[in-house]
Length: 204
Image 1 (tube, rainbow, N blue to C red):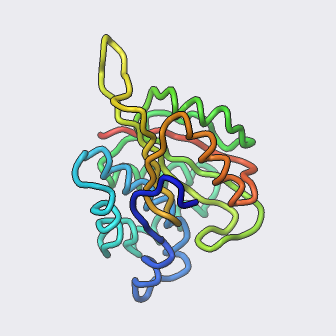
Image 2 (spheres, one colour):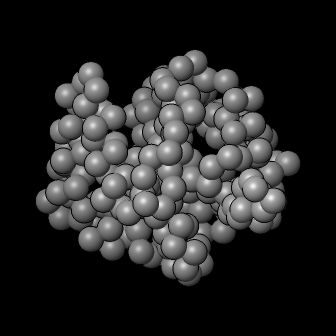
């Protein structure tokens, strides 16, 4: 999974470095790191290495208090996961703009179309898979970002790059034409995706 990577990151290493971090605090870390990364992308400041360093600091997405709060709300079931998600999105200065696909069977064509022909800039992408890998136990969240600008009454991409954050690997820059291939490799790594959920965010 090192193709097109531009900056390395490991949520496992970051969370290990935080003394006193409990299992409850680490649950959902990938989700919160992904939201935090999207907030950095909307700032349009710094480069990939700088973003990875910012994610690694104690008061960033790895803050154990924030993690535990999120995990507690998420585990309550019912609509609580949506409340928890909106809370963490809002804390990062973002707002949810659409739930493109709620929890549903994995369909790669749906997510590829949404990201390569975007109507939204920020994507929070969660997926579920059988088994466990280092840094993910049956579920995981990553993020995509497309640079968009208003042109002739609609949003158009500023370039052909899909910016990706994968909390177990780092930041990637993938040409739009190669995005499906990249996602296929990721799905195979997690052996494979079974279900997914896609929501979009924007700066508040």
